[in-house]
Length: 214
Ligand code: DX5
Ligand code: ZN
Image (spheres, rainbow, N blue to C red):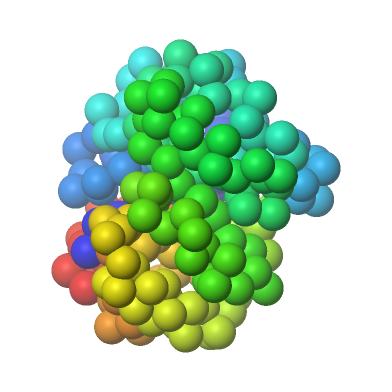
């Protein structure tokens, strides 16, 4: 299993310490949650923070944009050095154009689905995607309870991917811990995002290893 710890649950008064921990850990990515207070009912951080994180983080950046009109920020996010740009399907009027722009900028394109958004909406874009991010909570906050319907969606997405030419990785975000992580692994997830489970622990590197082993 690949693991992408979410910085949203880190200590914002000492991000360098938590990023150094991530650098020394077995984490595969660092997940960065950008919120605009419009698409989601919360505001997190933006480009100045991502620039600073990128300077010291040795893991590839997996950026999750919970913002309206994400297509406006493709070039700016590329400048930050992001590896993956995740845009919400609910925020994109012209998803094909946005995915093409992300690829033209040289990033991997991820499309994110809210809990109530069906996997079937991806049928005509799945072949162009590097990643699909399924939300297993309503986006906006860390520390929420896992929505179990996500397990069914992971299985549906895996079937859609495997019946097409797609190589899209399946990432899941929200309420991930050892128990829900195991269920997600069985359902076919490739990457687990984890905020509270990793950063609110006394031993975050061990928590990352537990998820890695699933
Ligand atoms: C929620 C964010 C998540 C969040 C997950 O909107 O997209 O990445 O940090 O936090 P946990 O793992 O605590 O549910
Ligand atoms: Zn996220």
